[in-house]
Figure 1 (cartoon, rainbow, N blue to C red):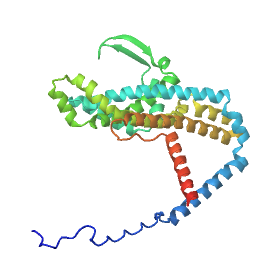
Figure 2 (tube, rainbow, N blue to C red):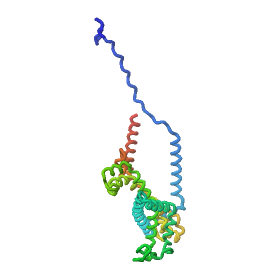
Figure 3 (tube, one colour):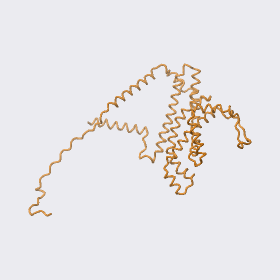
Length: 326
């Protein structure tokens, strides 16, 4: 619509624009106060201080004897036995768990039933019962033979010579560990999306090739971290091999405690300290294994403890700098 003649207004004659308001000073956002959190933190710190004070000042712990026993050859020899039993049982248990998991996932009803029964039985029976049963296995079968089923035997073995203390301990822990490893492996295989199986089948790949090149690499993302976590329980379970006459870390300390009854508490503290060290090492390995297999599943990898410490110290410096600027 056109303007009437003489109605045009030049820019010079236009009324001046209102001045823009002066921006207010930057407001500082303060977090809400949480007195409950501070009270809980103070209570926990007081309890920790009391506990540490009791450990340091109570003469019952005999820290001088703790230092004496900590690196004694007897304790270190038992520690080596513990590491050897744990390492062998971890490898054999994982291999047995893979076989049981594949049998559980098989199309054969017999293999599925046998695998399920084994896992159910070994997870139900206490480990100490399994070890003692294997230790007295020679009372049931004096000899073992290899030959035709229900027919003549080609080779015979004396069970008492084969079943050494180390063999009984490793076999018992491996049988028990295989039952738990089977569920870890089976859960990892089942965690792979069904579309991956269907896509591999659509390409015409053989079943073994599909499992080895497509399913297993993806299942390891779930299997490996969970099984490393299972190793912590295995390391602690090695303390039971003392009951089959194998002098591991706990067995060595128990034997020394019988010889030196006044040092029972320091010896138990030595065993506790070494198990804390072993499980802490496994926990560190677990963290980095989980971090490695998290690649591709997370947008950003979880920070390492060193990275967390660096970020926390940087945040504190920035906070103090802002406090000083105000």
